[in-house]
Amino acid sequence: MQLTLWTYEGPPHIGAMRVATAMRGLHYVLHAPQGDTYADLLFTMIERHGARPPVTYTTFQARDLGSDTAEIFKQAVAAAYGRFRPQAMIVGASCTAELLQDDPGGLSKALGLPIPVIPLELPAYQKKENWGASETFYRLVRTLAPAAPAPERVRASCNILGPTSLGFRHRDDLREVRGLLGDLGIAVNVVAPLGATPADLGRLGQAAFNVVLYPEVARSAAQWLEKTHGQPFVETTPIGVKGTTAFIEAVAALAGIDPAPVLDGEGSRLPWYSRSVDSTYLTGKRVFVFGDATHAVAAARVAAREIGFSVVGLGTYSREFVREVRAEAATHGIEALITDDYLAVEAAIAAAQPELVLGTQMERHIAKRLGVPCAVISAPMHVQDVPARHAPQMGFEGANVLFDTFVHPLMMGLEEHLLAMFRDDPEFHDGVAPSHLGGRPREEAGTVVAAAPAIAATPVVWSIEAERELKKVPFFVRGKARHNTERFARERALPLITVETLYDAKAHFSR
Ligand code: SF4
Image 1 (cartoon, rainbow, N blue to C red):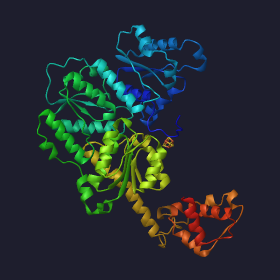
Image 2: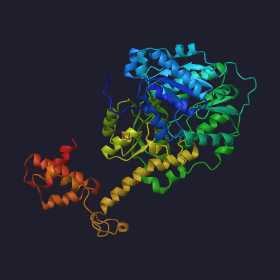
Image 3: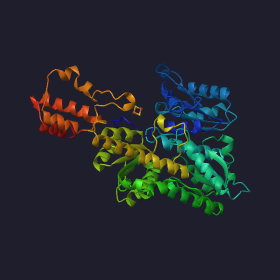
């Protein structure tokens, strides 16, 4: 047992759903109890898919357990085939159904459907979402890509492997990478799983090599294609200007193409922006990076080598990729944090005292609690990280996006600092609302909290000096500081809040 409140990854069948939802003409029958259909919302709400995922759940209930759950599964497979007529199917069990030990593979084979039906063995109690996606994609490729290599191959042709549904910026990364390959004159044979049909997977062998964009999803499949089809693969992550340059050089080498014209092109604005004098204050800023292995390693590289930050923490929840993360951490002179326990991440961030956190949605919450600026660079993400606008992480445009993403929260911090500095300015002081709101005095943030009935029960008195000292606290946390100090004073029956009480309370609550 592990007490878990937040989890970085879902169970492996969510990974399988990400592959199925990314593809066309593929259907997934999932043996799962009633309620597991929550997973649909990930796709329809977070990723805003316009259609339900191609998943049929058996949704068995407690009363079904006494009867034949295997029969329920068989009926679901037959019904799904009849209704959707897919080119191929994947079948498997969710965590609860795994305990029932019905055999999805054997049961569906017994139905004798005229399409490939691929059973998935996803151990829900040992493995997680990304592993589930990787295993599913590998099984699909292994079954559907014919083992014999295609006789004729165009040297300058490749497959792009790895983009899925619910991947962090996969949609936009793909557009950038397609653009780069197009500029180089390299033909894209198949992109998979995103947008591919089972029949497309059958054409994978026609490309000369593979481009693995997300090793967490596509490395296993690429390794199999290399072994059986003799297709080499490029795994250089095109994130950041240096990453993108290395990627271009690597694919150009495999395709026998001169990369110079593309490398001499317009490129990214990141190098100039980070060299410009306005960015001087970024140099040496302490940054803590956490995420999946690919994004964490890439973000740490960009942060340190392209923007000039100092990486004081680097970690991942991707246990399958610890080697890469450890190696990258070593180049920053630190030890990698390998964990999927967000409390351990929170403790590490608090200990490292960074000025910026680059992480997942979880780190956004942690950073908010610790009062540290933060940007999201990796899944798990929330709906705001599936934006309507083009917002890649990869390629030269991705590097532009990264510069803005990393720097923006720090600028907000600078703004807050300036607001605090000019707190006593007659025009801008905290008591005055912004001019576009008419400049009328506004209530001090947090007074509502301080005036709550339970707290107001015992009045406390502030000395003039303590009130003045309180004014030095930035306005957005002043209400909380007032509230905490009054609580501290009441609990100790102090009749008067002095400057000393204020600092004692601060020390007490920051322990
Ligand atoms: S981001 Fe949303 S779902 Fe995630 S913990 Fe916060 S409120 Fe909950």
